[in-house]
Length: 148
Image (cartoon, rainbow, N blue to C red; front, side, top):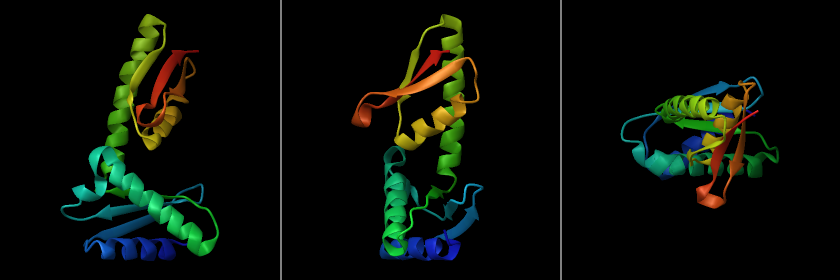
């Protein structure tokens, strides 16, 4: 994925919203891009539980695919929202891991977005004695932790 093209496309989207921001783009080891948007009063771009942020990210990825014909992933973070959220989610997951170990039975985590669930699954993969699985439908999807 070309960094410049991704930044230009995202800037085009943001300009339609009359949003003044600065972008910082980094290439990740797997070839995908991470774009961090910085600016004032950007909470509306994050939305409730990060839903607007996910929509913006999906829109950018679809636009880039349509323009280039190549599918590659671009992750967007706004004022470190995702970074902070993932840190909180890891703390929550650690608490639930302790519950699983203590009770030796499965426990359900709260409802999470698809990106948050994916992060939990990746985080849990570092534990040999715990396994994770997503259950539920639609907006009620959640992660279940189980002893291995």
